[in-house]
Amino acid sequence: MWRAFGFGSSDNNGSNHSGQSGGGQSSSSSESQRRRRISTLNTSGESDATEGGAPTGATTRQREDRGSVLPYVYESCIKAGFDPDDGADKIDKECQDNCLIFESMLDDPRHSFVCVFDGHGQNGRKVSTWMVNNMIRLMQASSNFNPRNMTQNLKLTFKDASFAAEAEMAKLNFDTQLSGTTATYVMLTDSEVHCGWVGDSRAVMCRRTRSGGVKAVALVADHKPGDFKEKMRIRKNGGEVRYLDPDEVDDPGPLRVFARNYAAPGLAMSRSIGDRLATSLGAWPKPSFRKVRITDDDELVIVASDGLWEVFENDEASKWCWDYVTRYREADGSPPGHLPSSQRLTCAQAIAEEAQQRWVTRYNSEVVVDDTTVCVVYLKKWILHNGPSNSSKDRRTSIHVDHSALKR
Image (cartoon, rainbow, N blue to C red; front, side, top):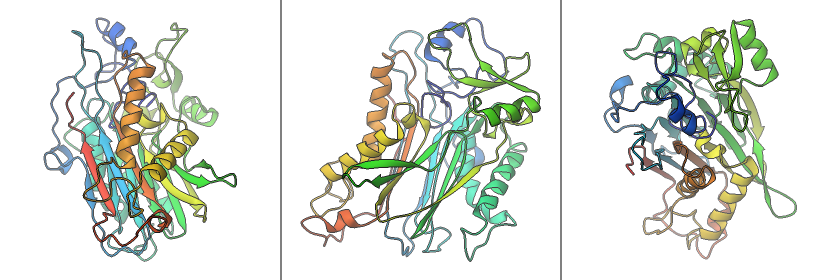
């Protein structure tokens, strides 16, 4: 995605592909699409969450604590994107983001698991929903998966699961030639963060500095077609990397993956799960991987779709979350929004709302605001112990807010 974060379509505006579902660009709508920098969009206004095995409305599944020994607190928020244009050409956008949190991964109290999926293309919502419902099964099916030590061979497990997902999607009852999803997987232990990613949904860790401020530790690096190694792989496989409209000097949009001399697929990332046409051109689903040790200075992890990262830099997001949490924490020291009587939004909700407002103001309401999904993991309990009281028995350790069907 380019300027968005989210549930599927998302380049500056809501999408990762150029053209219509058939692969070409409609001449009658090309001017409107360029204005919003959107290229693939389901305008039917209908959402079929039953595709891929999820019951209607179950866009996100989350397991509550099952005896986790990790001293972490979790929250997540999915916010549907929207078109701020009230004119006649207003676009009805479907939310394509999704996320998954397990406080106790497969009931192992030593591991927790956080995933963000940003779908794109006509069937992006179905793809991201299918990933939420099948990711754990795919990991368990890997010959590299070790249930006794889930972080052992985790890099290979993520790889196996990502390639298996794309292979299985080819047999489902919805098309994934021009639809797919990003995937950012984060496995946490009491001392390490293990991160795998495909595409441009991002994860960062907020770390305190000696000066008393905070900085971001990047856990991923976006997979973009303009990166030299990514571009070389795509060219080797018969694809090319170029702008959708190079004549737009002021804003040509993101670099995209195309078949040579053809107007498809127009993927704005160099890796994705699904997008089988792009895979044939070298934009494969292989995840990159990074392991980072948790230090005493690390406070929280932010995992989010590009609806956030198109309007927030890594350091800026870390500082924003840190300031919000320290300023608005509950009376007993809990993070904002984690007491039943709280009048505050959780940090994940608050920064998602801030991101979408930035979309509106930064682009003068001329682009469709992308779906925005944010997961926040508080790594330590210092904030719980640094307040007037830490005796609350009603504090919630996991909060999920789903506005994926929000209508504006």
